[in-house]
Length: 328
Ligand code: CUA
Image 1 (tube, rainbow, N blue to C red):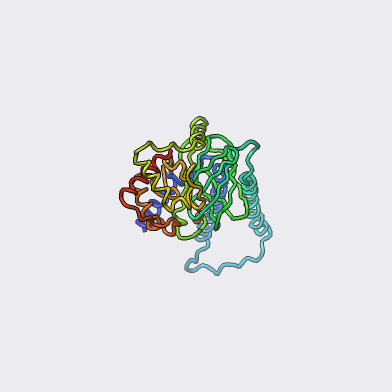
Image 2: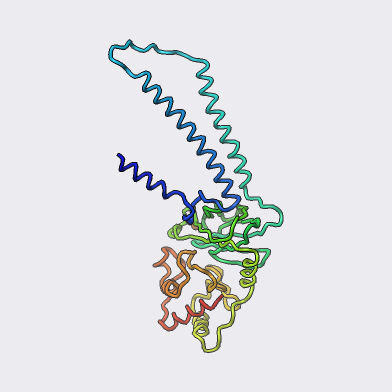
């Protein structure tokens, strides 16, 4: 029994702490702070109810237990004050929980103030697309936003239902085809926040991750400028130039966009792939080794991935990887 208690306590200590990238208990936006406040309200009411109920139970057990030689207890029938009390008290507690709940529901309903930065979030099996209609840019899997700025996320899906969830910032909110759901938030501090799809959406639902990169205004503006600029043309005779030729004659061009080269809309836009930290729905680090393995056999790394295995010679593979890495 002490061992079981120890294990339970050990497991519970794993539920909090700032070191966890996906904890709702370390809120970092106005949205998640509202949710956390409500959580604490309900939690402390539950603690109070637990203490009162358990105390009454223990008192009853001690005072009214059967004792040898004692007379049979006298049954009690009807007690107006008690009955009114145990009807009113829970009703009042429910009111104290319901009012903050309603307030939080309206506060997190997704309406950003006028002038918020709009980002359209589109769910795909199994990656995220972000469009910034007012900035005229788009991105995949890594959502860049400026710190302490109201953001309006407008979410929809290209296929099945997904759910956008970044535990430290807020959500979840479903992405449904033909409908727009909204999240509004303002993130407190710069940094990187991890999230993932929270609605079962097929074979690689668990691999549909996302990163939110929150930047200072100047760093964000640099990123926007970079996304607006077409990728540099590879130098003559470089590996990247050979890779561009391989890309040009590969089936990749049917599904991917690279500014000035191809217009595919099935997979993520690769125009600035070299500037991302991750690939494949924020699942793997964007390294030479992972890019090679991903291009050769994506479905082996991510079940159900639509990208078919590419049968490239080792030289062609090296060249394509060099080209993709040059796309900053
Ligand atoms: Cu998308 Cu689960």
